[in-house]
Length: 602
Image (cartoon, rainbow, N blue to C red):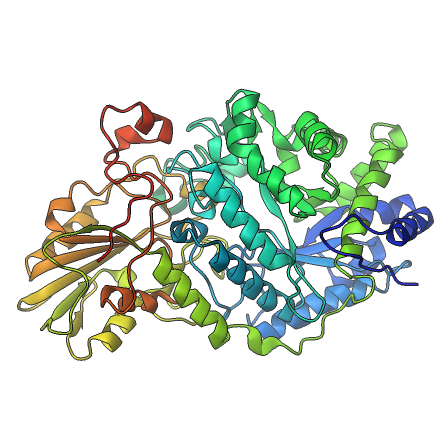
């Protein structure tokens, strides 16, 4: 008899519990450890999934089929899922991806604004609808596990993952994350729903600048990326707080997520007061599983256990005994399986700990309905990149825009405006509008996927009046100038940046454009607030557009006054680097350039 789903928000039924225990009793140690293993798809063949009874396969950022199409995604996922059913006990596989702003690895999928932009919407209903739409696109390609939402509460805008967080304030993070989680939980296609992974536990947004300790292999892999010298200065760093502050500021979203039915939590690379989260038994077992009653399973982050010790055996033992249930092993999964098997035989990891981990994994798979429906038929691929989802993304883009400054009635732009000069490569670049975690892990510039740019939107809204020169080599004079400045795409510690002031070439671009126009609008594509004081007096209006995604052309309707500005800052916007991090701003004698909650109406 197949395992039955009672309700994803309730404890599993007695029948499910009994059947999981029955299945657990039939499993060998090798099969149990296989279920605890998650492998990146480029490091394993489908036949090996069956041979080792692997519990999960993932696509890391950029882990795409070639060519990268929704059809090939569905076929790729299905091959691994079908292989799992050929194992001795036919325990179904769960396939995972980082769909952090849509099904963002898939060419043609809708890519929504990053979370920092969604935080500015303050719209929980919007977040729930985005979660549901993302689930539908994931399920259409057979993916049933999403490594989202991030419930980080970032306290330092220099962090390269800040755009993954909704806000610097815990209450807003919690409200929006729960709405998104609810959307993923909702049935997307038939009875199928997507398992959210609430991440990264806990305190990753509170790490201190300069506190990151990397292993040599990490330092080598990130050395001199794009010529930067301040990589991994805060990402994966150490959060130094007393427990009461940690609980109030960073743990609170997890408490509410567990109450709302969260069944998976991903652990952070970071540390708390010098102890890596992946070996923190007190927080993982005593607090999460004990005090908070978390009934799901814990997943490690990418190669994170390798950081715990120079000795890999110690890494495996420490992480499993701390409470990790499934280990993300991107590459050498055989080494992990061999090592954990040895640890059990040596008595360094108890059989009861293995059984607890596997029991949790099986119960979650049962809640997802995988034992009844281990394969999702690829009959809904037309949902990927659908007009319905693009309309939702346009709404999200428009609601995320924050009008920071507006003088001389510069906005909205009226149809009486005779001529508009537009400068900045970001204005006509989908990749720069999407940022990191877009098709590739780090993202890229250029036409990386389907979508619309701001220039295209402006040309449609003001037909015949828009002249675009990326480098501002304009001839003549315009009534209005628009400069769009973007950060180069980045992700994680490769986005850590010590100085957030505009680059000299960006300042020069604004000055060149100003010489050719009567009034000037600055639009910022960024994953965080930037220091703009040097150019503020040259700009009549400033708009924070964050990282809007594939539907950046929707910005034009707001600039034209067809849709109102409603976005409000979910972070304080500092006036100088002396007010970074947030603790420095709070200690400053000056107010921020724009405070939390700021947002003008045009």
